[in-house]
Length: 154
Image (cartoon, rainbow, N blue to C red; front, side):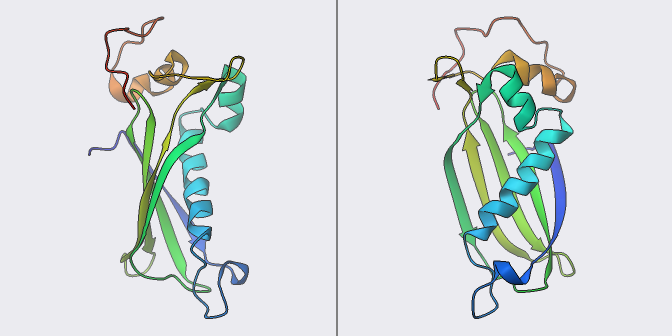
């Protein structure tokens, strides 16, 4: 799966993110994913404030995490987020790697779907407002109305 856009974020694992064994608590990886996802979306000027202003929310409808090796207190890691799907949903993949050795520690993905805020209805095609934000990356001409013949399955 080729990424349309990739970003990296460095994180120093803080003491409050680890358990009594000094290993990063598994739930904190979702926060690291979120931090990288926010940076990725900010890079295309479509962060959460812009989403809301455009009339869409983008809830996560699916996620997966695979823990390969633990990270520990005071370890420097990089979190890599890549936008790999955008036509009918947003799929962002993640890798957490040790900053020094580049060993993969954790990987996963999130899937988000656009929801029209006024009526709370899920969109089965990515709205034009998002397509406009990434048009310079896809060389795609954005139509004012989505093609109704496109595959709309999630």
